[in-house]
Length: 174
Image (cartoon, rainbow, N blue to C red; front, side):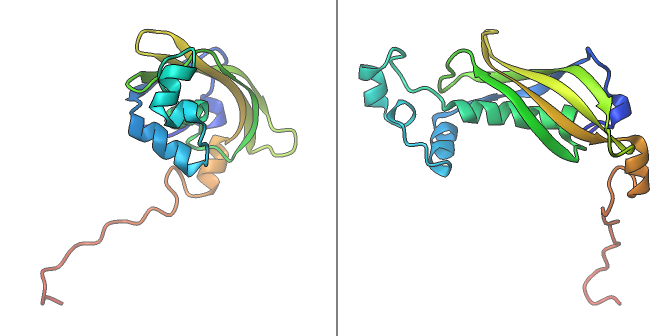
């Protein structure tokens, strides 16, 4: 399984469909809210959401949806990244509710060699998230600094520092 890409492996116009999707549970949403101290009742209080909002139910916090999509994109886009340089834009297009399944895909918009480091480049991508019925929920653009193939080789290949398994000996044997 590939984990990320080198600069040379990106082609402008390519679309990576991230798999699998993620069904968002109430627990997921509440845990994220608690971890990030977002206690807005729209996300945490079903009674409030049912009676006091246009949605009539809890809405999944938008930054959780963004975080899911960012995470989904890592194996295809930034698994080898040196740095996420910029989140250029982030739009929440439609609400996500408990029980919705989120899917994502990323399009390569542009790429350029680094101006200061010849062993890396900058890739500009747009990631889109949508629900199980195809409704778009979130879109964001980011710029990622990625290594060239030469950078990877100079630093020990695809999995530098990975230990080799040792043979297990039965207890008592030296």
